[in-house]
Amino acid sequence: MDQVERIAAGSHVVVVGAGIVGVTAALALRRRGYEVSVLTSAEPGAEEAASYGNAGWLNPGSVVPHSMPGMWKKVPGYLLDTHGPLRIRLAAVPQAWSWLLRFVTCGATEARVRRIARALRPFLSDSLDRHAALAAEAGVAELIEGKGLLVVYPDEQAFAGDALGWELRRANGVRWKTLDRAGLLALCPGLGENYRYGALIEGGGHCTDPGAYVAALGLHAVRQGVHFLTARADGFVVKHGVLHGVSHAGGILRCEKAVIAAGIATRELAALLGDPIPLFSERGYHVQVHTTDQAPSVPLMMSDMKFGITPMRAGVRAAGQVEFAPKGAPPDWQRARILLDCLRRGLPGMTIAHGDGVRRWWGNRPSTPDCLPVIGPSPSVKGVFYATGHGHLGLVSAPWTAELVGRMADGETVEEAAAYAPSRFGKFRL
Image (cartoon, rainbow, N blue to C red; front, side, top):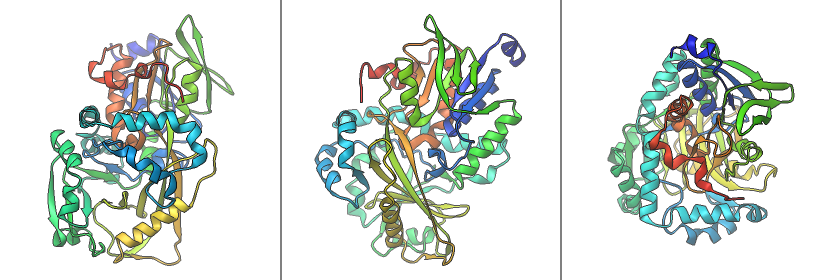
């Protein structure tokens, strides 16, 4: 059925959320001929969205889950270490304990992390090419670069200590070349003296301005006929288990289908439909600085400090930190100061320009306890689909997520998406 026929048949889809996942889903659905409306509480590319503040990495090597064997031994230290890469506020434990228990369990064995890695691979393997095509369509091809991604270590022995992670990458088609100190300095002249070994993931790339990129995709969607309405979804019109509309303060958007891509807000919206989606916010932080010399030419990850450094259009961004905090708690800007200190330690040869200040940001990453996104039809209401829970991988995962959503909206049974089904959580509650 072509575009005109579908719209004439009344195939209206409402996408809830205008982050990178929501906007790419809207574009994919419009391409398939649907009439598409996006209901969003903030404009595409807005600073409060997780899509704005990420590290910008398009990394095929991100198949390695954050929960790995032996992680349970580290949890007590995370509770006590106020300067580490993962911080759990004691006040958050009552809210998060069941989520954290399942999170640690999901990566408790090598067999489990191998299954997770295989399930993540389709989102990541050709993401650079998919984003390059999207950016070109939107007229911002320059925002996507494919220069590779660098992971640096103190020495070859430290690299060998991450053997399981690199084996997971190799098993899922990721290729890299190792570099000695001279090779590292060629890509990153300001690198600290204590980093003498590394791996360049050659099939990777990055976005040089995630906020501007999402905004550009939003404008592209408008040109393609997608309608945007600035309002917060607050409910659904459901009759006999079938969706008939999405409500907001200004009224009701009548529709036959809805895609909920609202990030962490998806948890409350799903609860209104009777679907337990156990999302928890892994708060992330970044700092962005202006530099005068010896900035890295490619994004790099400090293996020991667990944060990423990305050359952006407007400076160098250090992003990372995971914080579990009670819902509604104010940001802990010490996390941003830690990132700035790590940046200075990791790149002591890079000069930060004076007078321009340091920009800081925080946001909510919507994360699941089994390290996989939630993509698929609602178990409770016909016509509702979820596209959320990507954690640290929202940007890189968005194009393939959008393809899956489009196929599901068309009524296709997508067998390869079974691992992401919302129904997998059963009655799990936070």
